Amino acid sequence: MSQQINVGLIGFGTVGAGVAKALLEKGRRLERRIGTRIVLRQVCDRDFRRSRGFRLPASLMTDDPWQIVRHPDIHVVVELIGGLEPAKALILEALRRGKHVVTANKALLAHAGRELFAAASLAGTDLYFEASVGGGIPIIKALREGLIANDIDALLGIVNGTSNYILTQMREQRLSFHEALLAAKHHGYAERDPSLDIEGRDAAHKLAILTALGFGVQVSQSEIHVEGISKISQADIQYADELGYCIKPLAIAKQVDHELEVRVHPTLLAKSHLLANVNGVYNAIYVHGDLVGSALFYGRGAGQNPAASSVVADIADVARNLASGVSQRIAVNHAPHHGIRRLRRMGDIETRYYMRFMATDRPGVLARISGVLGRHHISIASVHQKERRAARIVPVVMMTHEAKESNVRNALQTIDRMAFIKQPTVAIRTEAPRSK
Ligand SMILES: NC(=O)c1ccc[n+]([C@@H]2O[C@H](COP(=O)([O-])OP(=O)(O)OC[C@H]3O[C@@H](n4cnc5c(N)ncnc54)[C@H](OP(=O)(O)O)[C@@H]3O)[C@@H](O)[C@H]2O)c1
Image 1: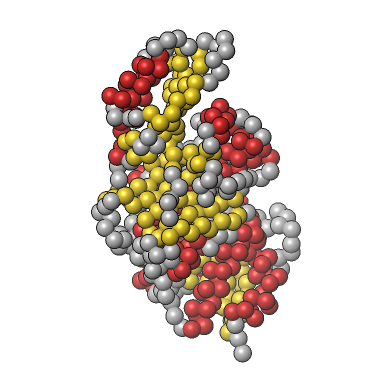
Image 2 (image 1 turned 30 degrees about the vertical axis):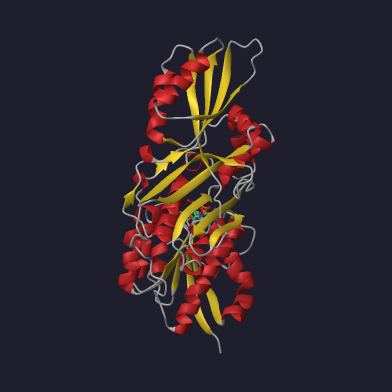
């Protein structure tokens, strides 16, 4: 005879409704697969009148989330309201009461993960969070279990579908940033206030979670260098394209010597790069480990069903653990991995750069620019002067060899003060494909 676990769901919004629907409609099939019956016992939301496209029995509904975390018969609390509070207080109370918790709340985990995992450890219960990164892609399980034998030295992710959709539309449809943002809103891929997505902060939350799992390093949000995509222009997308690159919103965690780089910014990728063809709202996370080499995880990074797929997988894991009488099977490890001593200062990172100068079209300009770059130890790989025609101000596009970020910043400060430079210079970092 199969066992039974009772689930309390807090938040009946996009993801919550998907989870409730999956549990109600696929309960029998799930039971056959995992050997435990998963029963949706109670669902909390502020407002049940809004249509979610399926009928939830009225007997399950409550508007009091505390009723769920204190319910004596509920084994697993699923937090899907988002935000920092009261989500954090509810999770802590559920853990304190010996309940297992599943959440998709990346913002909360990025801000208070250490405290929440310590509370779970103290209570001897589990806190699962697969849907917090990559929506339906099981990257958390891959990092915690499938790749555990590896010393990981690089994690690169396209982890924000909104930003990726906007940059893809700009490239494929030749839209401006604002037109592409409007298209994203029109298709429901961008929130009414999209700033968390387009300014890179959502990706930074996810990067903090990936960094903790991949490298055992806890980074605070202020330690991650974050640049959004709102300054990327149609012109740069086109010039990059002509040079054989595309621009992708990347979250990067990389070990270089004894330091760890953690940064989120638009990045030029050669079209041959594994991540270059991840388009639209799709997400992908590239992992490089010493044993596995390169591995790529690709799929839908958001949306009701993909997120529900991950949340239900977490519930199933808790059910299996309960059935075998184990918990805390996979502890979250906070010890930095092999050889990482500190985070690398942003000024110390080294990459190749794409630069676009907007300069008056007159003799000697190129020599002056390259002179300043040379004095800052930046060597030029190629120069492309665009649209000479009759325009008085012309774009000069350069690709550099590897250069140090602080040298690039200092050089551009000097160059942008020169009278013939008519707009602030655009500099975009590149990421080279791994050779193995
Ligand atoms: N949407 C996705 O594709 C996706 C993917 C992965 C992870 N996530 C994460 O999943 C979580 C939920 O996202 P979502 O998109 O489902 O959000 P959502 O659609 O806004 O759903 C949240 C629901 O919770 C309700 N709620 C908020 N505070 C409450 C409270 N104190 N008591 C009772 N109900 C409350 C909201 O009601 P009101 O509308 O009245 O506020 C809303 O119905 C977030 O942490 C998000 O980051 C989302």
